[in-house]
Amino acid sequence: MNEVKFTGVSEANYDGLIGPTHNYGGLSAGNLASATNAGLIARPREAALQGLAKMKHMYDAGLVQGILPPHARPDVTQLRVMGFCGDDDTVLKTAWAVNPQLVRNMSSASCMWAANAATVSPSADCADGRLHFTPANLSTMLHRSIESEQTGRALKAAFNDPTMAVIHEALPQQSTFADEGAANHVRLCDDQGEQGVEIFVYGRDALANETSTQFPARQTLQACHIIATRHELDGERIVFAKQNPEVINAGAFHNDVVCVGARRCLFYHEHAFEDTHATLEAIRTAADGLFAPQFVEVSNDDVPINDAIKAYLFNSMLVQLPDRERLTLIAPTETEDNAYTKAYCEKLVSGNGPIGEVIFVDVRQSMRNGGGPACLRLRVVLTESERAAANQNMLISPDSYETLCKWVKSHYREELAPDDLGDPNLMHESFTALDELTKILNLGSDFYPFQRG
Ligand code: SUG
Image (cartoon, rainbow, N blue to C red; front, side, top):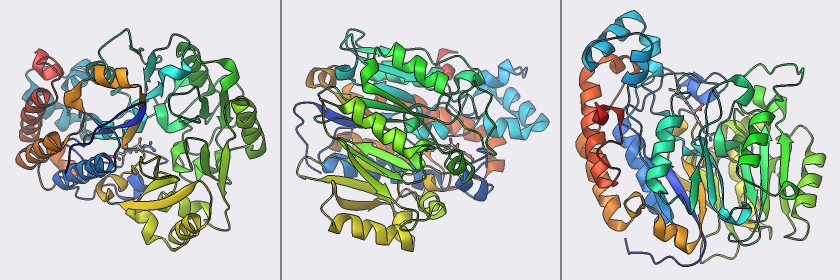
């Protein structure tokens, strides 16, 4: 692996490093993979190495690759808030005896899905010329609603110059403001460093009298409005689009399960939006004078919606590689395993549209919980000076990749069942591993609650 030299404005991918408690808890209603695979034996070591291999792949392909550290799990602080007392072992043991399902929720490694970490607006879009982040409150799912504070801490560790980056507080933990971050946000632009169009996709208007979906609609219009305002975005260059309730009920719990965009291109399933015509018109209007959007719509005849959701065609990373003219789709191997999506990918690259290549990556351990290549990463467009000011230890380099693989191999279990989560030894192993990680990533010695005492 050779050292890559980066210049100019770049779109970095910050991936969630998969944590030592990766398991299949079946915690996410409406996420079909999570429900189907509940109770399976997970392979945390393999999972983390798959995630790191994807990061290495992106770095080797010439993209800036960052790392967001796992959160400390089980979340003993939360268990204490819930009334369990004593030292960490006693808290865990009593909570497990009383309510193992609560402990499973407090033990999920779900922060690996960094697309849900925050909504990010590049400095080129924001009136104050700074990079803005709003950590997602993830209020819909118990196991994810405990992520935002530590995510804010991680983002501050990564982008610690307030003259360049603003890390906002998460929105209030109330269902009116339910927010799932960048998984429901798409940015289109001409060149990365120029102003773009930000598309906020929501599942429900919490202040309207709407019929609720069978599965939870995790993003509200109200959350989108607040984030756009906080990030000081130009009102003419934003679009609010509603998810199709039928695709939420079919298992598209986030918009990034049926849609992905990059540069001028929006790649989406014909059933992704409630009103496709109005959404495309709004994007055209918002982009007027900046660039001409390119729409790649996948018909239900080519890829039936249930296959799109199962094979995660759209939960791919759509990236501009430095040595390619057209965009590259980094898709999960499951997309290659499905006859419809495989055939569609072949057709896609043989045409002369904006997407010229599809590369398949193996993130099967994450996929079994409904997290594809795109779920695992948070996109952050960085100018040269923003990149230079960022925490360099949180960026993948040939050396850090090797160090992190060694770290995983020496600390992670091969196998983990949801019933192992009550084991205090797992907690000790995890905290020891994370303590060491704070040194590798230069996070400081008070990054995790267990380090603060
Ligand atoms: O929030 N799965 C995650 C998957 C998130 C995928 N992210 C994006 N689409 N961007 C979720 O549903 C399952 C955990 C479990 O069941 O143990 C889980 O949380």
